[in-house]
Length: 151
Image (tube, rainbow, N blue to C red):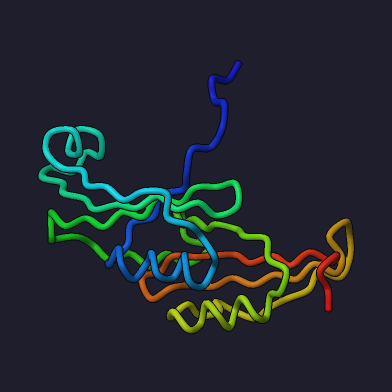
């Protein structure tokens, strides 16, 4: 039997908290729930990152929370840009009502299509449109426009 009772949030490490918050709020309509800082023994012990000093924001998007984390320390880190097929990559899928408009709006914030938009032609999701987008740091969003929102 599982002890999981829900999903608390999706955490994303970002280069700039201000830039990331602007994208999620202005382009996608998220609301800022709170901002906070983590440092000292607690931050290091929980994250496993010695000397961690973090600025963070929790955003609400629909019924889901996004936690954006900007590590101020340590400054030496790797910049990974996993592709969708690389082990350990992740993506967050968002339901949208207008795929083309959302792709264009995300583009204003540096997010680019990973491939092309596509429409499922058969099966229970026939007519549903999909797009994968990447930000300059390699984060991935999947946008899904259900057939019930087709133009």
